[in-house]
Length: 110
Image (cartoon, rainbow, N blue to C red):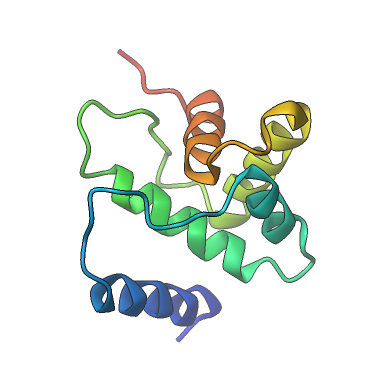
């Protein structure tokens, strides 16, 4: 299994093990996402971003459209740049900040 495969499996296992609720699952804010994504060993960040992007694919309308050619490292770089440039918003929900970062970096063509 590649490095994302193991992390992705862990995320999937946790998602299946916990019942779905109408509230957000993660209490991680933008600062938490930035901390994980700036870590030299960014496997957790990349797994989070890949899982986040995959879950978004089920939603309509799409908030962002990431080309198949884009890898996790590129998504991480875009998210980190976005979060650094908006440090005043780092206490907001991490999921909200990631969605905004990915929408800014990968807008859907209309």
